[in-house]
Image 1: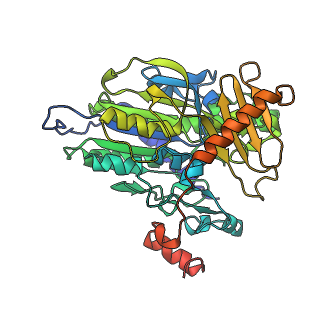
Image 2 (image 1 turned 45 degrees about the horizontal axis):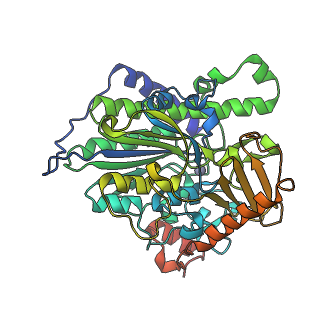
Image 3 (image 1 turned 90 degrees about the vertical axis):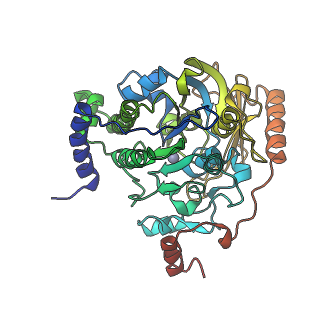
Length: 460
Ligand SMILES: [Zn+2]
Protein backbone atom coordinates (compact mmCIF):
# COMPACT_ATOMS: atom_id res chain seq x y z
CA UNK A 1 0.00 0.00 0.00
CA UNK A 2 1.35 3.38 -0.96
CA UNK A 3 1.94 5.66 2.00
CA UNK A 4 0.70 9.16 1.37
CA UNK A 5 2.07 11.63 3.89
CA UNK A 6 -0.52 14.21 3.00
CA UNK A 7 -3.42 11.82 3.52
CA UNK A 8 -1.91 10.59 6.78
CA UNK A 9 -1.48 14.10 8.14
CA UNK A 10 -5.00 14.96 7.18
CA UNK A 11 -6.30 11.92 8.95
CA UNK A 12 -4.51 13.43 11.97
CA UNK A 13 -6.41 16.65 11.42
CA UNK A 14 -9.71 14.85 11.77
CA UNK A 15 -8.71 13.74 15.26
CA UNK A 16 -7.55 17.19 16.27
CA UNK A 17 -10.73 18.70 14.82
CA UNK A 18 -12.87 16.69 17.17
CA UNK A 19 -10.59 17.66 20.05
CA UNK A 20 -10.68 21.31 19.03
CA UNK A 21 -14.46 21.39 18.94
CA UNK A 22 -14.84 19.86 22.39
CA UNK A 23 -12.12 21.67 24.33
CA UNK A 24 -10.21 24.81 23.47
CA UNK A 25 -7.50 25.43 26.01
CA UNK A 26 -6.96 29.16 26.47
CA UNK A 27 -3.49 30.58 26.92
CA UNK A 28 -2.93 32.78 29.92
CA UNK A 29 -2.42 36.22 28.35
CA UNK A 30 0.11 38.40 30.10
CA UNK A 31 -0.36 42.08 30.82
CA UNK A 32 0.28 44.04 27.63
CA UNK A 33 -0.17 47.59 28.83
CA UNK A 34 2.66 49.92 27.95
CA UNK A 35 3.91 52.41 30.49
CA UNK A 36 1.79 55.04 28.72
CA UNK A 37 -1.30 52.93 29.30
CA UNK A 38 -2.00 52.69 25.57
CA UNK A 39 -2.46 49.14 24.49
CA UNK A 40 -1.01 48.39 21.06
CA UNK A 41 -2.83 45.86 18.92
CA UNK A 42 -1.44 42.48 17.97
CA UNK A 43 -1.22 41.93 14.23
CA UNK A 44 -2.04 38.66 12.51
CA UNK A 45 -1.59 38.57 8.74
CA UNK A 46 -2.81 35.45 6.95
CA UNK A 47 -1.72 34.92 3.36
CA UNK A 48 -3.99 32.47 1.53
CA UNK A 49 -1.81 31.14 -1.26
CA UNK A 50 -3.49 30.74 -4.67
CA UNK A 51 -6.96 31.54 -3.28
CA UNK A 52 -9.46 33.06 -5.65
CA UNK A 53 -11.65 35.82 -4.27
CA UNK A 54 -14.69 34.47 -6.10
CA UNK A 55 -14.28 31.01 -4.48
CA UNK A 56 -14.90 32.40 -0.98
CA UNK A 57 -18.40 32.72 0.46
CA UNK A 58 -17.80 36.29 1.65
CA UNK A 59 -17.18 37.24 -1.99
CA UNK A 60 -20.33 35.53 -3.23
CA UNK A 61 -19.31 31.91 -3.86
CA UNK A 62 -22.35 29.69 -3.45
CA UNK A 63 -20.49 26.57 -2.26
CA UNK A 64 -19.36 26.16 1.39
CA UNK A 65 -15.58 26.65 0.98
CA UNK A 66 -14.98 29.20 3.71
CA UNK A 67 -17.29 29.27 6.78
CA UNK A 68 -14.55 30.53 9.11
CA UNK A 69 -13.15 33.18 6.78
CA UNK A 70 -16.75 34.28 6.08
CA UNK A 71 -17.46 34.69 9.81
CA UNK A 72 -14.30 36.79 10.15
CA UNK A 73 -15.27 38.84 7.08
CA UNK A 74 -18.65 39.63 8.65
CA UNK A 75 -16.74 41.52 11.38
CA UNK A 76 -14.23 43.08 8.99
CA UNK A 77 -13.65 45.63 6.31
CA UNK A 78 -13.90 43.63 3.12
CA UNK A 79 -12.22 45.15 0.07
CA UNK A 80 -13.95 44.03 -3.10
CA UNK A 81 -11.47 45.46 -5.63
CA UNK A 82 -8.06 44.42 -4.30
CA UNK A 83 -5.33 43.78 -6.86
CA UNK A 84 -2.14 41.79 -6.29
CA UNK A 85 0.99 43.48 -7.66
CA UNK A 86 1.97 40.18 -9.33
CA UNK A 87 0.53 36.77 -10.08
CA UNK A 88 2.86 34.47 -8.20
CA UNK A 89 4.18 33.85 -4.72
CA UNK A 90 7.65 35.39 -4.38
CA UNK A 91 7.08 38.89 -5.84
CA UNK A 92 3.63 39.20 -4.22
CA UNK A 93 4.98 38.38 -0.75
CA UNK A 94 7.99 40.64 -1.30
CA UNK A 95 5.52 43.46 -2.05
CA UNK A 96 3.61 42.69 1.16
CA UNK A 97 6.77 42.81 3.25
CA UNK A 98 8.41 45.88 1.64
CA UNK A 99 5.43 48.02 0.54
CA UNK A 100 7.09 48.21 -2.90
CA UNK A 101 6.26 47.00 -6.38
CA UNK A 102 8.23 44.27 -8.15
CA UNK A 103 10.02 46.87 -10.30
CA UNK A 104 11.70 48.11 -7.12
CA UNK A 105 12.06 45.11 -4.78
CA UNK A 106 13.17 42.84 -7.63
CA UNK A 107 12.29 39.52 -5.97
CA UNK A 108 11.30 37.26 -8.84
CA UNK A 109 12.29 34.54 -11.27
CA UNK A 110 15.62 35.27 -12.83
CA UNK A 111 17.43 32.78 -15.07
CA UNK A 112 20.69 34.33 -13.86
CA UNK A 113 19.55 34.65 -10.24
CA UNK A 114 21.68 33.33 -7.40
CA UNK A 115 18.93 31.20 -5.80
CA UNK A 116 17.71 27.85 -7.05
CA UNK A 117 14.51 26.11 -6.05
CA UNK A 118 16.29 22.77 -5.72
CA UNK A 119 18.40 24.28 -2.97
CA UNK A 120 15.34 24.37 -0.72
CA UNK A 121 13.17 21.50 -1.90
CA UNK A 122 13.94 18.17 -3.45
CA UNK A 123 12.35 17.39 -6.76
CA UNK A 124 12.77 16.82 -10.43
CA UNK A 125 15.99 17.80 -12.18
CA UNK A 126 13.65 20.24 -13.95
CA UNK A 127 13.47 22.43 -10.82
CA UNK A 128 17.11 23.40 -11.29
CA UNK A 129 15.88 25.71 -14.02
CA UNK A 130 13.85 27.63 -11.42
CA UNK A 131 16.23 30.34 -10.32
CA UNK A 132 15.34 33.57 -8.63
CA UNK A 133 16.59 36.56 -6.76
CA UNK A 134 15.27 37.45 -3.31
CA UNK A 135 14.77 40.85 -1.70
CA UNK A 136 17.91 42.79 -0.89
CA UNK A 137 19.11 42.83 2.71
CA UNK A 138 19.00 46.64 2.37
CA UNK A 139 15.19 46.52 2.31
CA UNK A 140 13.36 47.42 5.51
CA UNK A 141 10.58 44.88 5.93
CA UNK A 142 7.34 45.04 7.89
CA UNK A 143 8.78 42.53 10.36
CA UNK A 144 11.89 44.74 10.77
CA UNK A 145 9.70 47.76 11.51
CA UNK A 146 7.50 45.97 14.01
CA UNK A 147 10.43 44.34 15.74
CA UNK A 148 12.05 47.77 16.15
CA UNK A 149 8.76 49.03 17.55
CA UNK A 150 8.86 46.39 20.27
CA UNK A 151 6.73 43.65 18.75
CA UNK A 152 7.53 39.96 19.01
CA UNK A 153 7.59 38.79 15.38
CA UNK A 154 6.96 35.33 13.93
CA UNK A 155 6.28 33.82 10.54
CA UNK A 156 5.06 30.32 9.74
CA UNK A 157 5.07 29.57 6.03
CA UNK A 158 3.99 26.72 3.80
CA UNK A 159 5.05 27.51 0.22
CA UNK A 160 8.54 26.70 -1.13
CA UNK A 161 9.13 30.25 -2.43
CA UNK A 162 8.76 31.48 1.17
CA UNK A 163 11.72 29.47 2.40
CA UNK A 164 14.34 31.59 4.18
CA UNK A 165 16.70 31.24 1.24
CA UNK A 166 14.51 33.58 -0.82
CA UNK A 167 14.92 36.41 1.66
CA UNK A 168 11.43 36.77 3.11
CA UNK A 169 12.38 35.70 6.64
CA UNK A 170 14.19 38.99 7.38
CA UNK A 171 13.10 40.72 10.59
CA UNK A 172 11.29 37.76 12.15
CA UNK A 173 12.38 36.58 15.61
CA UNK A 174 10.98 33.18 14.68
CA UNK A 175 10.50 32.03 11.09
CA UNK A 176 9.26 28.48 10.69
CA UNK A 177 9.79 27.27 7.14
CA UNK A 178 10.15 23.60 8.07
CA UNK A 179 8.17 20.73 6.53
CA UNK A 180 8.23 22.19 3.04
CA UNK A 181 9.65 19.19 1.24
CA UNK A 182 8.17 19.62 -2.21
CA UNK A 183 6.25 21.98 -4.47
CA UNK A 184 3.21 20.64 -2.60
CA UNK A 185 4.22 22.82 0.37
CA UNK A 186 3.24 22.33 3.99
CA UNK A 187 -0.21 21.37 5.23
CA UNK A 188 -2.52 23.90 6.88
CA UNK A 189 -2.82 21.85 10.05
CA UNK A 190 0.93 22.02 10.51
CA UNK A 191 0.94 25.81 10.01
CA UNK A 192 -1.80 26.28 12.61
CA UNK A 193 -0.10 23.93 15.09
CA UNK A 194 3.20 25.79 14.83
CA UNK A 195 1.47 29.18 15.08
CA UNK A 196 -0.43 28.14 18.20
CA UNK A 197 2.72 26.80 19.84
CA UNK A 198 4.51 30.11 19.22
CA UNK A 199 1.52 32.11 20.47
CA UNK A 200 1.37 30.08 23.64
CA UNK A 201 5.04 30.76 24.32
CA UNK A 202 4.67 34.42 23.35
CA UNK A 203 2.05 34.92 26.04
CA UNK A 204 4.89 35.09 28.59
CA UNK A 205 6.06 38.28 26.86
CA UNK A 206 4.94 41.81 27.70
CA UNK A 207 5.10 42.75 24.01
CA UNK A 208 2.36 42.68 21.42
CA UNK A 209 2.88 40.23 18.57
CA UNK A 210 3.10 40.28 14.78
CA UNK A 211 2.33 36.84 13.38
CA UNK A 212 2.49 36.16 9.63
CA UNK A 213 1.04 32.92 8.27
CA UNK A 214 1.13 31.53 4.75
CA UNK A 215 -1.31 28.68 4.02
CA UNK A 216 -0.54 26.84 0.80
CA UNK A 217 -3.17 24.12 0.33
CA UNK A 218 -5.13 25.70 -2.57
CA UNK A 219 -1.91 25.56 -4.62
CA UNK A 220 -1.64 22.54 -6.93
CA UNK A 221 -1.53 19.56 -6.59
CA UNK A 222 -5.09 19.34 -5.29
CA UNK A 223 -5.50 16.25 -3.12
CA UNK A 224 -8.08 17.04 -0.44
CA UNK A 225 -9.12 14.44 2.09
CA UNK A 226 -12.52 12.91 1.11
CA UNK A 227 -14.17 14.70 4.06
CA UNK A 228 -13.23 18.06 2.51
CA UNK A 229 -13.96 17.03 -1.07
CA UNK A 230 -17.43 15.65 -0.35
CA UNK A 231 -19.29 18.99 -0.03
CA UNK A 232 -18.25 19.86 -3.60
CA UNK A 233 -19.01 16.63 -5.42
CA UNK A 234 -22.22 15.28 -6.88
CA UNK A 235 -22.55 12.14 -9.04
CA UNK A 236 -22.67 14.43 -12.10
CA UNK A 237 -19.32 15.92 -11.12
CA UNK A 238 -17.54 12.70 -10.21
CA UNK A 239 -18.79 10.94 -13.36
CA UNK A 240 -18.83 13.89 -15.71
CA UNK A 241 -16.21 16.29 -17.06
CA UNK A 242 -12.97 15.46 -15.20
CA UNK A 243 -12.14 19.15 -15.04
CA UNK A 244 -15.20 19.81 -12.85
CA UNK A 245 -13.77 17.30 -10.39
CA UNK A 246 -10.48 19.22 -10.41
CA UNK A 247 -12.33 22.42 -9.48
CA UNK A 248 -14.16 20.51 -6.72
CA UNK A 249 -10.75 19.42 -5.40
CA UNK A 250 -9.54 23.03 -5.46
CA UNK A 251 -12.61 23.99 -3.41
CA UNK A 252 -11.92 21.08 -1.05
CA UNK A 253 -8.40 22.41 -0.44
CA UNK A 254 -9.82 25.87 0.37
CA UNK A 255 -12.23 24.29 2.88
CA UNK A 256 -9.42 22.29 4.49
CA UNK A 257 -7.36 25.49 4.85
CA UNK A 258 -10.40 27.38 6.18
CA UNK A 259 -10.97 24.76 8.89
CA UNK A 260 -7.36 25.08 10.04
CA UNK A 261 -7.72 28.88 10.11
CA UNK A 262 -10.92 28.43 12.09
CA UNK A 263 -9.02 26.46 14.73
CA UNK A 264 -6.52 29.30 15.05
CA UNK A 265 -9.22 31.99 15.35
CA UNK A 266 -11.11 29.91 17.90
CA UNK A 267 -7.99 29.69 20.05
CA UNK A 268 -7.41 33.45 19.77
CA UNK A 269 -10.95 34.03 21.01
CA UNK A 270 -10.64 31.52 23.85
CA UNK A 271 -7.45 33.22 24.96
CA UNK A 272 -8.93 36.71 24.94
CA UNK A 273 -6.52 37.83 22.19
CA UNK A 274 -8.97 38.13 19.32
CA UNK A 275 -10.48 41.52 20.15
CA UNK A 276 -7.17 43.35 20.39
CA UNK A 277 -5.74 41.75 17.26
CA UNK A 278 -5.81 43.34 13.83
CA UNK A 279 -6.40 40.40 11.49
CA UNK A 280 -5.55 40.78 7.83
CA UNK A 281 -6.49 38.05 5.35
CA UNK A 282 -5.25 38.37 1.78
CA UNK A 283 -4.16 36.11 -1.05
CA UNK A 284 -0.85 36.49 -2.85
CA UNK A 285 -2.63 35.67 -6.13
CA UNK A 286 -5.48 33.57 -7.47
CA UNK A 287 -5.64 30.77 -10.03
CA UNK A 288 -6.89 30.34 -13.59
CA UNK A 289 -9.39 27.47 -13.67
CA UNK A 290 -9.79 27.20 -17.43
CA UNK A 291 -10.83 30.77 -18.19
CA UNK A 292 -9.35 32.04 -21.49
CA UNK A 293 -8.27 28.42 -22.04
CA UNK A 294 -5.63 28.85 -19.31
CA UNK A 295 -4.72 27.15 -16.05
CA UNK A 296 -2.47 28.02 -13.12
CA UNK A 297 -0.95 31.40 -12.34
CA UNK A 298 2.22 33.40 -12.73
CA UNK A 299 2.37 33.78 -16.52
CA UNK A 300 -0.39 36.39 -17.05
CA UNK A 301 -2.16 39.13 -15.09
CA UNK A 302 -5.78 38.09 -15.64
CA UNK A 303 -8.46 39.02 -13.11
CA UNK A 304 -8.61 35.35 -12.05
CA UNK A 305 -4.95 35.66 -11.03
CA UNK A 306 -4.70 39.12 -9.48
CA UNK A 307 -8.17 40.19 -8.26
CA UNK A 308 -7.70 38.90 -4.72
CA UNK A 309 -9.53 38.62 -1.39
CA UNK A 310 -8.54 41.38 1.05
CA UNK A 311 -10.10 41.45 4.52
CA UNK A 312 -9.13 43.56 7.53
CA UNK A 313 -10.61 42.98 10.99
CA UNK A 314 -9.89 46.02 13.05
CA UNK A 315 -8.62 45.69 16.62
CA UNK A 316 -11.24 46.60 19.25
CA UNK A 317 -13.73 47.37 16.49
CA UNK A 318 -11.90 50.63 15.73
CA UNK A 319 -13.55 50.88 12.34
CA UNK A 320 -16.99 49.64 11.41
CA UNK A 321 -17.26 46.45 9.35
CA UNK A 322 -17.93 47.45 5.75
CA UNK A 323 -17.60 46.42 2.15
CA UNK A 324 -15.35 48.83 0.31
CA UNK A 325 -14.84 49.15 -3.41
CA UNK A 326 -11.66 51.24 -3.18
CA UNK A 327 -8.93 49.61 -5.28
CA UNK A 328 -6.21 48.59 -2.84
CA UNK A 329 -3.04 46.52 -3.15
CA UNK A 330 -0.79 44.33 -1.02
CA UNK A 331 1.78 47.17 -0.91
CA UNK A 332 -0.72 49.20 1.14
CA UNK A 333 -0.69 47.08 4.30
CA UNK A 334 2.78 48.16 5.50
CA UNK A 335 1.96 51.90 5.28
CA UNK A 336 -1.44 51.28 6.91
CA UNK A 337 0.17 49.56 9.88
CA UNK A 338 2.81 52.31 10.12
CA UNK A 339 0.07 54.94 10.14
CA UNK A 340 -1.95 53.18 12.83
CA UNK A 341 1.07 52.63 15.08
CA UNK A 342 2.57 56.05 14.45
CA UNK A 343 5.76 54.57 12.99
CA UNK A 344 7.70 56.56 10.43
CA UNK A 345 7.64 55.03 6.96
CA UNK A 346 10.95 53.70 5.69
CA UNK A 347 12.20 55.56 2.60
CA UNK A 348 11.00 54.43 -0.79
CA UNK A 349 7.71 52.79 0.22
CA UNK A 350 5.31 52.94 -2.76
CA UNK A 351 2.10 51.79 -1.11
CA UNK A 352 -0.15 54.21 0.75
CA UNK A 353 -2.52 53.65 3.65
CA UNK A 354 -5.85 51.96 2.92
CA UNK A 355 -7.68 55.09 4.01
CA UNK A 356 -5.70 57.35 1.65
CA UNK A 357 -4.98 55.40 -1.53
CA UNK A 358 -2.65 57.57 -3.59
CA UNK A 359 -0.68 55.50 -6.09
CA UNK A 360 -1.44 53.99 -9.48
CA UNK A 361 -2.83 50.46 -9.25
CA UNK A 362 -0.47 48.28 -11.24
CA UNK A 363 0.82 44.73 -11.56
CA UNK A 364 3.77 43.07 -13.27
CA UNK A 365 4.87 39.58 -14.23
CA UNK A 366 7.98 38.44 -16.08
CA UNK A 367 7.66 34.68 -16.63
CA UNK A 368 10.43 32.38 -17.77
CA UNK A 369 10.46 31.70 -21.47
CA UNK A 370 9.92 28.00 -20.78
CA UNK A 371 6.82 28.80 -18.66
CA UNK A 372 5.12 30.96 -21.23
CA UNK A 373 5.81 31.94 -24.80
CA UNK A 374 3.48 34.91 -24.45
CA UNK A 375 6.03 37.26 -22.88
CA UNK A 376 5.95 39.73 -20.00
CA UNK A 377 2.91 41.66 -18.81
CA UNK A 378 2.35 44.93 -16.99
CA UNK A 379 -1.12 46.28 -16.21
CA UNK A 380 -2.62 49.50 -14.91
CA UNK A 381 -6.16 50.03 -13.62
CA UNK A 382 -7.98 53.30 -14.10
CA UNK A 383 -11.68 53.72 -13.32
CA UNK A 384 -13.54 51.03 -15.27
CA UNK A 385 -10.53 50.24 -17.42
CA UNK A 386 -7.58 47.89 -17.27
CA UNK A 387 -4.76 48.29 -19.74
CA UNK A 388 -2.32 45.41 -20.25
CA UNK A 389 1.05 45.99 -21.88
CA UNK A 390 2.70 42.91 -23.38
CA UNK A 391 6.39 42.51 -24.31
CA UNK A 392 5.36 40.70 -27.50
CA UNK A 393 2.98 43.44 -28.56
CA UNK A 394 -0.35 41.78 -27.64
CA UNK A 395 -1.53 44.79 -25.66
CA UNK A 396 -5.10 44.74 -24.37
CA UNK A 397 -7.66 47.15 -23.01
CA UNK A 398 -10.73 46.00 -21.11
CA UNK A 399 -13.74 47.75 -19.63
CA UNK A 400 -14.14 45.75 -16.42
CA UNK A 401 -17.56 47.22 -15.64
CA UNK A 402 -19.16 45.95 -18.83
CA UNK A 403 -16.74 43.05 -19.34
CA UNK A 404 -15.49 41.74 -15.97
CA UNK A 405 -14.37 38.45 -17.57
CA UNK A 406 -12.01 40.28 -19.97
CA UNK A 407 -13.46 38.75 -23.11
CA UNK A 408 -13.44 41.85 -25.33
CA UNK A 409 -10.21 43.65 -26.10
CA UNK A 410 -11.31 47.23 -26.91
CA UNK A 411 -7.81 48.56 -27.58
CA UNK A 412 -8.44 49.31 -31.25
CA UNK A 413 -11.80 50.89 -30.51
CA UNK A 414 -10.33 53.22 -27.88
CA UNK A 415 -6.83 54.08 -29.16
CA UNK A 416 -6.54 57.40 -27.34
CA UNK A 417 -7.54 55.97 -24.00
CA UNK A 418 -5.17 53.04 -24.55
CA UNK A 419 -2.34 55.38 -25.40
CA UNK A 420 -2.87 57.60 -22.37
CA UNK A 421 -3.05 54.60 -19.99
CA UNK A 422 0.05 53.09 -21.60
CA UNK A 423 1.89 56.35 -20.99
CA UNK A 424 0.68 56.50 -17.38
CA UNK A 425 1.84 52.92 -16.80
CA UNK A 426 5.25 53.41 -18.39
CA UNK A 427 5.82 56.78 -16.71
CA UNK A 428 5.00 55.35 -13.29
CA UNK A 429 7.08 52.21 -13.68
CA UNK A 430 9.90 54.33 -15.10
CA UNK A 431 9.78 56.58 -12.03
CA UNK A 432 10.30 53.70 -9.59
CA UNK A 433 13.84 53.11 -8.32
CA UNK A 434 15.42 49.89 -9.57
CA UNK A 435 16.28 47.17 -7.04
CA UNK A 436 19.81 47.28 -5.66
CA UNK A 437 22.24 44.93 -7.38
CA UNK A 438 22.32 41.67 -5.48
CA UNK A 439 25.50 39.70 -5.09
CA UNK A 440 25.98 36.40 -3.30
CA UNK A 441 27.13 38.08 -0.11
CA UNK A 442 23.99 40.16 0.02
CA UNK A 443 21.61 37.26 0.41
CA UNK A 444 20.82 35.71 3.74
CA UNK A 445 21.24 31.99 3.29
CA UNK A 446 21.08 29.59 6.18
CA UNK A 447 24.01 27.23 6.54
CA UNK A 448 22.22 24.15 5.33
CA UNK A 449 21.09 25.89 2.14
CA UNK A 450 24.56 27.30 1.63
CA UNK A 451 26.05 23.81 1.94
CA UNK A 452 23.57 22.52 -0.63
CA UNK A 453 24.28 25.40 -2.99
CA UNK A 454 28.02 24.75 -2.64
CA UNK A 455 27.62 21.05 -3.23
CA UNK A 456 25.72 21.83 -6.40
CA UNK A 457 28.40 24.24 -7.56
CA UNK A 458 26.24 27.37 -7.40
CA UNK A 459 28.32 29.05 -4.71
CA UNK A 460 32.13 28.99 -4.51
ZN1 LIG B 1 1.48 31.83 -4.17
